[in-house]
Amino acid sequence: MTPSPKTRPAMLLVASALLLLLAASPGWAQGGPDGERSQHSRQGPQDLDQVMGHLTLELDLSEEQASEMRIVLEEQRQQMQALRREFPPSDDPDDRAAMRERARRLHEENDERLAAILDEDQMQQYRRMRRGNRHRRQGGPDPSPIP
Image (tube, rainbow, N blue to C red; front, top):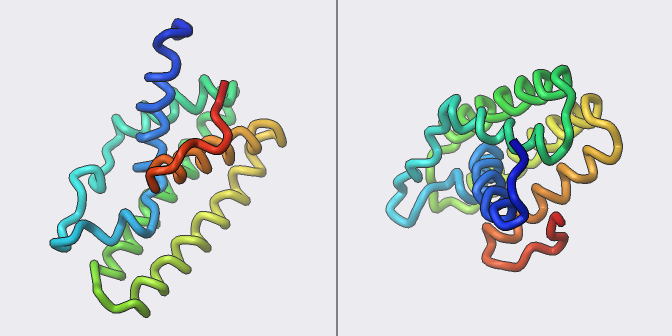
């Protein structure tokens, strides 16, 4: 079923938010001001199903691409969870910097894996979607809205 033009922006926003949660950015992984982690840090399979449904639609993924991408994103989620366990919330700037660097490297490695799965256009679209998520998370406008 194809979303109507009226519901597509809302669906895109919800799916993008879920993708954002899956990516588990280093800043978000640090937890709130009281050191508590967000309820969303406990991602479940349903969330990944929703994200994959959105990505399959937006990137026009084949079944094989969707299957391979799901594996990469699930492994990335597990890697980020392990990283958060290794670096619990801390006020130490060195700890935060080390976690950000490790998370950045994990994202780069996973991007390389995704680039081997997606064609060039799909990878560019995926990066635009992720960049838009990052800007929205930081309270700014989406620099490259998806039509």
